[in-house]
Image (cartoon, rainbow, N blue to C red; front, side, top):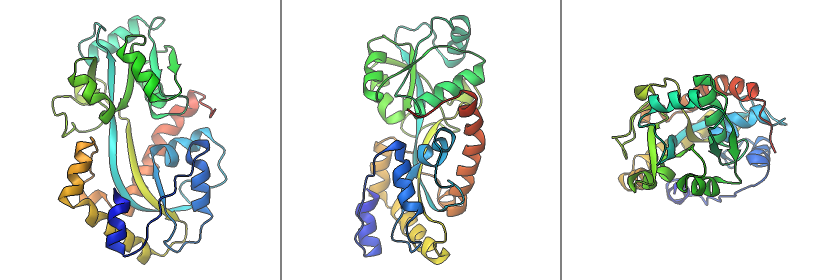
Length: 277
């Protein structure tokens, strides 16, 4: 969606290349080695610019080898359970987890995914240890949650909200500081009794280290103006994205968020001994 508008705003062709392999690390390596002229950017997220640093041996530094450009919309996780689970709220769910650690089954979309690390953080915050069921993707995991084969899972709001409204799963909380515009009836984890249980797939643009600040400023201004367009904002809201306030759409804000998330997540991931597969 941003690529479409950037073509018009910058008056340049915008080529979006999806580089697969090793959780995005190959694509980031290409950007790290690119000329710092503003023509090669990384469209990255929490996984590529935070968690990958704790589970891969990278040939580049996630902070020093890139210049943050702009913080983009995010999609927070919800925590949900099979609809037959007895717990009616998050506090009751935590009590149930503590009493049934040998029986709990929590699905993830795979080793090293956001839902995996959300499960690890849940265990850390609640002092519990229960089995994790790693699937090859979020689709199969969701299907088993819907059919009651597993007890609980976290996933992005855009995935869970339709099923919650259909009554096929129980949603307990949004794992963010603020309630969702799209689902104001869902409390935050802080409100529901588990402070600090925050898991959000946030996104951003980065440039290679050494990209001139005037180029970064021009790219930032273009994206900030695009994110202010009513039509685009509505499309993002319809997809359950959370658009950061304008004052957070700065290179400094993206850099600060990345560093804070690294400080939060790397110890959690390393303590769980998570390794890339």
